[in-house]
Length: 279
Image: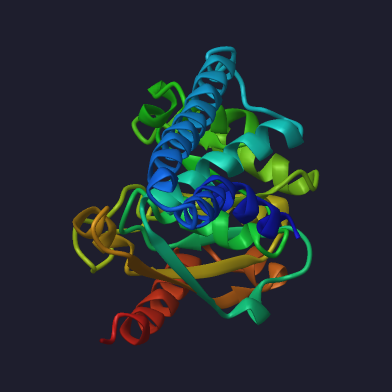
């Protein structure tokens, strides 16, 4: 129901404008003048609303305290992040297809996957939101320097400093704490950074400690097509497939080494990638 409301609000102004044009054209030559006036009014109204919303979100983002992780769920900030993500999905012209919903476990989980584009977490959050599943990703520190983007900190997104082992461990512990206290699902890309090629880069297996510490399953998500967004946008739509190809039960997670988990996840992603990247 929430998704339908968002789409209705998004298309309200364009649909109203089309209706006004159709009605006024029936009035003859004067109808064209009236249509032009109405078109200008609706265009100004639409741009004005979007601009005011962006300014409001920007001002709110300036109040975010990045000194410590957000320990509790903040529905208002999560809603703001979802609206931003929805806008980015539409601007990027993504058509997201999800496979393997049956593999999504009940309760909390650690989401891990391959990383081809900066749009990967955006697509994942938007896709899972359709089923009422919230997920907060672990991201790089540079993202928190962007005024609007830093708002994700209030939605339980975490920063990991790969160059500082002590801070990286603190982030791993904070992520495990969020899962253990049933605050939100956590997502992470073991590659650490997006790959410039379809082939995956080396894994940082330490991230699997999050699931081990929290004693939760690992949901493996293979993403295909997101690497084409930069080339296609805004002229062409991009088809992105998110395949929840496997779920490793919590008992197997805790009984395995992080190296073994990394090998298992990589093998699953490679198998799914061969299928999803097929023309």
